[in-house]
Length: 226
Image (cartoon, rainbow, N blue to C red; front, top):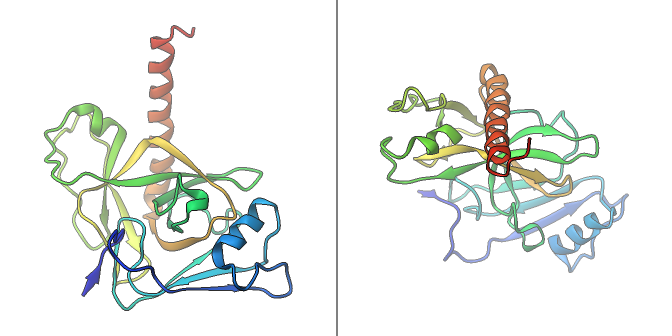
């Protein structure tokens, strides 16, 4: 049986929190919220792990009911390389990116991670306004065929994603939104879900830069910023 997330009516998942006891650690009764508060105050354990039992509560990736997902905090480009597919831990502390499925773009000198998010548009047929397809690109798993492009002059090429585990699956009708860029703070625990095909990672960055530049140009024209 396959469980999809988010599961709005599902019971709270069982969560276990593990940290390196040689470093500052959250109160044992406080769980992940205490740790996130510590992180905001620059008090971080060296390692951070949140294990969620059963179907997860975030993102656009289907997982099996009996699988545990491990969320960890990471730093640097070794993990956050362009094209890495991650799921942000669902938390009220970081509500803006809570539960989102994200694709890494870059890491700042201060450790902030620039990301794009996956979005889902069920029922899209390819006949929608061209502006949607100028800002979005479809995604597909490496084991499936790319979706057919119906707006050849405006649509961005689809991106192929390899999922970390064979039991995972991408929900249908998912896209990358290149207009919306998100910042992930280094303390936020994430789960490693997979990656964009290596030969397409440069295209990912180029496409994002082009669409962001077009967005800036439109903004300058509207407000006459010349």
